[in-house]
Amino acid sequence: MNPTVAIAFVFIGCCSNMIFLEYLISAIPTCGNLITFSQFLFISCEGLITTSKFFTVPPKIPIRSYLVMVAYFFLVQVANNASYMFRVSIPLQMIFRAGSMIPSLLLGVLILKKKYSKAKYVSVMLVTMGIAMCTIASANQEVKHVHDDKEPSKDPETEAQNVFNDLLLWTLGILMLTVALFLTAGMGIIQEKTYTQFGKHPKESLFYNHFLPLPGFIFLASDISHHVSLFNQTTPVSVGLGFSIPQMWLFLIGNLLTQYICIRSVFILTTECSALSVTLVVTLRKFVSLILSIFYFHNPFTHLHWIGTSLTFVGVILFTEMVHVPGLMPPKKGVKAD
Image (cartoon, rainbow, N blue to C red):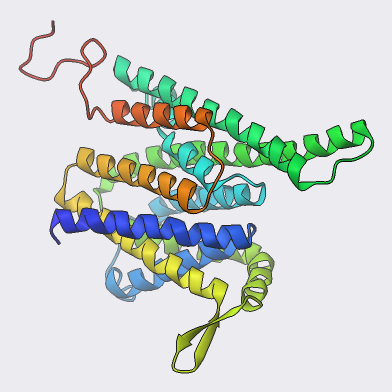
């Protein structure tokens, strides 16, 4: 596939995926485990046919090496899903996930003993400030939302306690996202060591990282079954030829197909373009998804949110060294420092 076409499909697939996800979460905020299970099952079935060819192709990376990565990957998905239950908005989730380099840099210094340029540290400071601003702004929005949604109590102490309880639940959601970020960074370190030893095999990794965790969903079976029942009860939508399907299942099918387009397009980009180009495309895609979420779904976004978002994405661009800043970055080879 031509890289330009792949880039177009990244934006179409990933942004459409976000829209379907927001439809699902807006209707039933607790359905994250069903969505994740469906995604894992869909990608596993596709990989079983095209990658492992029904396990006739032996893995190039030993299964035992995948097991630790799979445990991290599964926990990350569960933590991210849990945050939906605590009224953490999808725009704030996007901003949080854009800050994945913060724990990556910290763990890189502490565990891998890596050294980074000044630009890396400045970028992490910008991202940290941006996320902090967005979190504070969202906390203020959450307090206002709770106050507007609930009938005020005649007792001031009871009213204050109700606001505190709702804010505490929202804070737990933020904690879940933070834990997920550090688990993702830890998984990245394990992947780096594994790929150094056995080489990079992205299609194989994609399959086994989704196939091997499937037994873990047994522990979530009751929750998944409950949400299957909730999906079945939603308004039927005609799909032609006299057939109809509950609306939430239609959204879920759209989510699965667009996620597959998104993942496949990013995979193609990694084989056709430099890592820097892929990072740029993915960063821009996140920003477009954020804008869509704000305007299409009318998610509350204050001036403080915009300032925090700008700092976050400037920090991301600086971290990936898409722009050269004299004095912060080491001079390129063959170029004398001023």
